[in-house]
Amino acid sequence: MSQSTTAPATTAVEVPTIPLGELAPWALFFGLLGALVLFFISADQGAVSLPAGTAIHEWVHDGRHLLGYPCH
Image 1 (cartoon, rainbow, N blue to C red):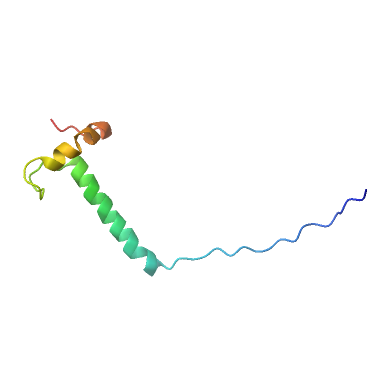
Image 2: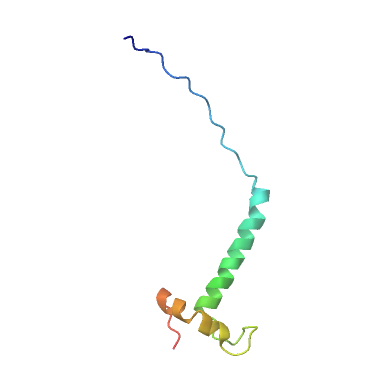
């Protein structure tokens, strides 16, 4: 039995780059969407909601308590 002592050939791996111009609109979109979701979960009490009354407050009520936001 003979063992080969040659090292395996290594190949360079190219890492693809994403231009900032293509990434910025998506980052802005998801940042604003996250801020909107955080607002509705944490601060909305029904005063500025499109649905009348406290509909959104009731939908996210348990999530507010889970995240530690007091609501009543």
